[in-house]
Image (cartoon, rainbow, N blue to C red; front, side, top):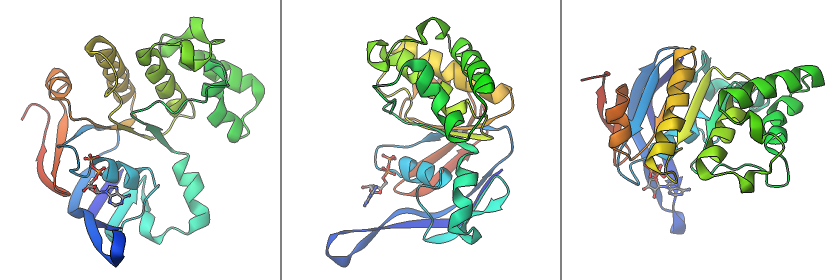
Length: 227
Ligand code: ADP
């Protein structure tokens, strides 16, 4: 499902210098697995997730996503693969001028899905994240937790095989954070592969799962659930 072999990512730094964001990273995730991505700020979590969502390409090593060797993929093949990967960010990145319902519909509209199916799928998603009563509301009158649940609905409405979430609970209080993580765990139970970066210690303790620990761009621990 996801396989990294000796992956490195070098960022260009000012003055023609460069710095490693990630170095020598090797691990694999099985289909349907849930993994925490842990490590202090600056460890490389966002960089790793950006490789998994194809917004960055490795400068070294081999990245395989959903059975495709990304380094060999031609540029024109990237959008189709990207559509099979859902992304949730720390800030919700919802469009303020669209209603909650229209925000969730957007990925389906871009794919040219029929309006009847858009309507049915969007309602099902809004119900699943507990926002079926907020469909007409613009995002800015929702609470932080509601907005993040809406962002999850938008990320998964097109039924991605892989969902990556970068600090999705960073701006939420604990009750809201738990609700967001409970949704991501349920998504995993339904068969989606889920990777969640967090610097929280309480959430991984409350929801034990595989944990990849990054420090200074390197994978320093890879622990099975409950280890
Ligand atoms: P985390 O998500 O764990 O906080 P990041 O992946 O954001 O870590 O950053 C890892 C390292 O890469 C840091 O040293 C950071 O300064 C560096 N870095 C991240 N993005 C860039 C960039 N666009 N250009 C140069 N360096 C970057």
